[in-house]
Image (cartoon, rainbow, N blue to C red; front, side, top):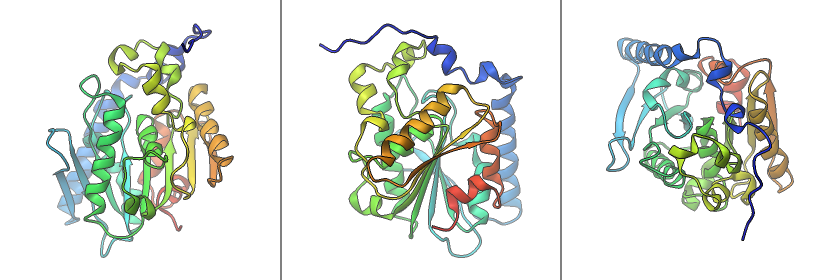
Length: 280
């Protein structure tokens, strides 16, 4: 029998991003309004924006695509966070702008939230979303996700990825932003009442415990002002996969917190956009 040691720290606080950001309760409303303004502006300016494309039968199995001017360089996917149990694609549309302006078709998928879905089921859903959109957008693929989304895109490039061999072969870079790569500490959190992780699933869903399945570069990006656990997890995956012949790096950006670290994705000239959708 496997023994799980009793927690020696406050793991709820370790993952409590919003509790450590001033006025964070205002952020979801701010994100939603800003993303809606971006969609309205895109459509008013005649840019191509496809919304609510179904990739499965569940109401949340849908994605949006923000298309560039002219022919797309390839497919860039951004998977949202929210600890697998909050938010959806509609909060984040404006974060497609940096990659879109650089010529990429940017896909933003939603997925079923916990507790309706387990994390392993959400991983499978994101695989189906990427398979679906990859059949409609040609060229190389770049993956990015934030927080829980960082976990989900890192799972796409594990050896047991739900992606087909053909789609995996098109992936040229994965960017995990403030990603969760070792899920075992979540067993000690109150949020696990919703996530319903057990040790077996926490292990099987942890990229740090998996064999890499894609040789393309991996970047773990995190803000210097984030909770220390997120900085640890970024460095951990880069260190482990770097020892497994993946070109893996960890990048700590300034003093950004868990939310401001995303802001550069709206700027086509930013360092984080270059990591997401720059030259291969």
